[in-house]
Length: 113
Image 1 (tube, rainbow, N blue to C red):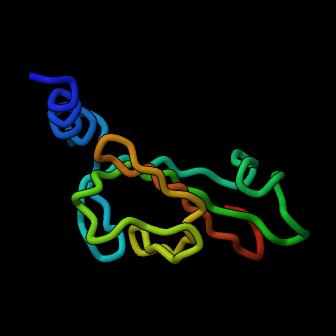
Image 2: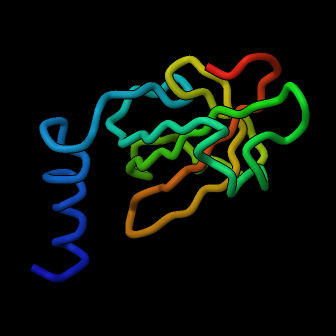
């Protein structure tokens, strides 16, 4: 088995295995296995340049790792994407060996939480 074949086998057998890391999520109305890491503004300053952008604004962030073949299209920076019913903007999307790493941001007004 080549290295590429082993990586592809590991994506399903380990990384996107529901008994290991993955969970079912709905990404733009497509149910698929993904690994999602949620974050709040206070923990994620790299996208916004600081913990709060302007008075009264805060952000919700998510990083999604999903198999490229499971989505009908590759998300594009600046486009909207719905994750488990919540609307986000795509901050970035990179592909590596058949996996997409998608960084999402939702800027909101009001109290964080």
